[in-house]
Length: 451
Image 1: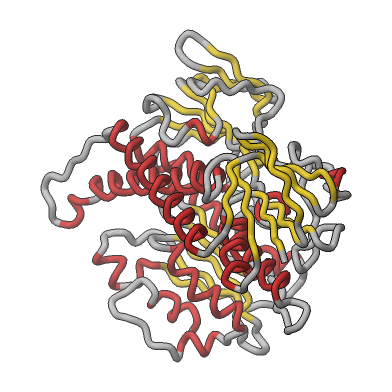
Image 2 (image 1 turned 180 degrees about the horizontal axis):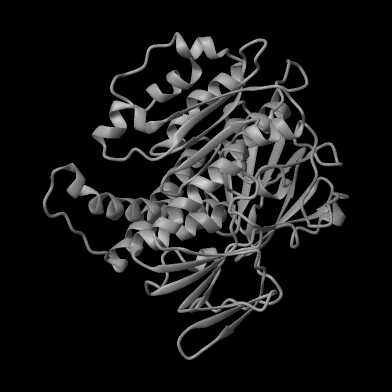
């Protein structure tokens, strides 16, 4: 069997790796970077810069820990070098693993010419690949609205900002979803003034309102200007920087503007009609529970599938696809449950959630038990001089089964794993209570919330 993977991001490289382990002949075609452009040139750089900003913020809290003078100054050039170094190391690690496993790597742009034939357009010319199974995992790119013209200088997409050529004195962030609020945190931590254009009445419209409110309070305390109920409709260059115009007549004058208004799938250059693969109105490729498209031997995973645009989900999709191709027709195959996928927002404090949310449960008229414990009640938060945030656990009042949870606070992205495991394994709150945790540790707040 020959398995052709179009795209080397988390979905593609995980599918290729797992399929190779299972004895499948694999060819992977990637035209940018092995490891994925959205992953290595968006996700990882943003978290790298956020980590640097976090270190600066921690320095500012040092006086509360008995240190009289703790200062640090941002070195933008050194930060750029660090971002590039991490991308290079991660890309090299993935490339080395795939090569060692016998995966054939082709640098080029893949496109369909027939349902079972892919052509890779390379620098040396086209390479024809006949396949028994094909995975479309070509990722996504930042969405650019019709009223904006990014120039890589003052008007930036996300990929222009890791890091920017110069630290903005005042940046207008357009978009209040996960990417937008991470930008707000990142730039304020690095020392920029920030205005966030919020088209809704609160940030993170798809998250628990209590969680969103906690983040807004933090932003306001740090001097962030929130322009609520304002939808950006234009950006103009000015002698001093940029002017962002909103649909209600308000404007924002800033040195830079960053667009954080979603992603578009990279499906436009694949010649999908030649394979008979259907897309929705936005260009995403609908898939079934096996990640199959409407053409049974062609799969789609990662951002192009439009399911959950998370690297963790893409990686799991890739592994499941490989199993389905190699052995899925002969053994029981466990489907992915996207409702149980944890997610995190790397702001300060961090935000993470999994499963059903409190507001969602009440909107559905579902009876749930909600327990909440502030980190301020834990010894470790006091020791770390950071008592912000809380743990919230949602459970079934009749059975005690954990249905979901939200965490706001330091290391939320790590701590959510405990609740995610409970949700996935359908554990009861009693199972968390009866587990022994390290003391002193922030995870103790989870045990308290489960009691």
